[in-house]
Image (cartoon, rainbow, N blue to C red; front, side, top):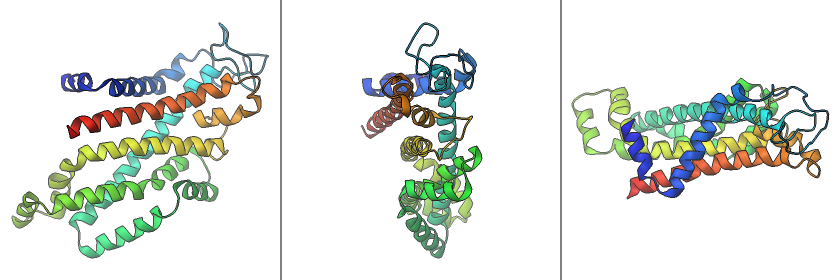
Length: 273
């Protein structure tokens, strides 16, 4: 804990701002639904697209629901699904990359050519096709978001793993008879974690934006569930009279992604120095 505090203090101002935004949204995702003033699906205001007031800090939406309560609930889906999806994508991509790095050459060729084929398909098109084919339940949507970014993670992880697998200390371990699993998990993986964390942070941002884009198109979470992108889509009809119901979730998406980017940039620059 002390080392984390020291590392946070060494961050530049932009990094501290990014860290503050990331921590804020993590706290909101965890505690938001418990502190929401109203149930997110309750019709609590007779006036739709009402402005900010003492009772409704962010106004009401197109059905008279409290925007703040909807925002606190939607943040949990956006942050939670994106975090789970990026964890799955990184686990699969890095696992396959390690297999390609320490395995036989034919396995590396098969995995690399397969991932090159998948990465040639634009991520949004790939996700749209999968959603149209398999649906958009929470579980399926999370898996689709994860699979969309496996190829990108694989390419980064493979380039790191292949370079490390050729170093002397790995060759020494191989010469003394260590198995491929040992080489991958003990000799290679620990030494590629730092650059991988930067890539994972970027993948998280990409997944947040992809999830929000799918939800805006009506292919993300389905009612009664809603993430931040859904909140923007369902209130577009009231832009002229209830702009706050659209601006609030849009600003939430922007602050989350900008915060993660600022933190990654600051952490990467610190390690480079």
